[in-house]
Length: 259
Figure 1 (cartoon, rainbow, N blue to C red):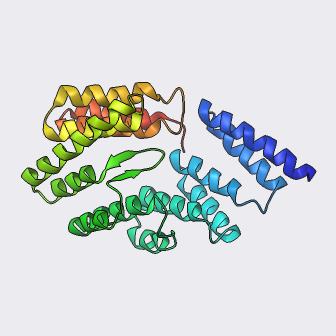
Figure 2: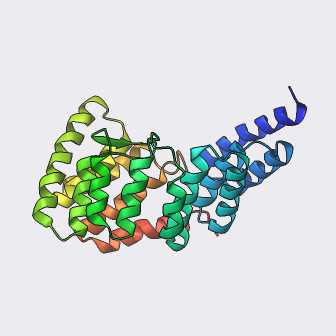
């Protein structure tokens, strides 16, 4: 094996540990050292861009995404990462729409991306239509596991159609409760169920589920993949009208390593 490649692989093993521990600067520096040793490996800037995105270093994240795309123009993850960065950084939905077009039609993230793209552009009916094109009843990715009905309910809320929203949220609730019977320790399911409960007006149950998701995978255990559940808990508090506690969660997220 090439010596530099072997050293790069060892460094990448270290980045995984640094990410779990929340030692973000160490992770970023180690990614950069690995890339110096293996400058043709698109996986390195691809992995790096998600760390940079999660810690709000958006300009550097875009550079890493562009670098990965240049090295591996047929790989989907650099494009997916770049979409997330554009949404988070400056809300550039126009460029994001172009970037999404490069994601393969069979990719599991594509329905999720198109749904939120339409939502961010205010195309709520189009967002629901995007869900209709999804051959599955769920969108399941590493950070979230959400029934299409829950996405549909969120769109109806944006459309100021509360009765329709309640109906589909209740359908999503049943799906999530049934799924949790088989996977009781899946934080994604508890987090999604908490949002459904909140939308249905079950405040105590909503908070219970949101907190359970955070407790199953806290940021102290996984500094990156624990983030979505804190975000969802903030959203739950927002839905039920407890804005002070929602702000507490947001302030906590903002306190996490970033620039």
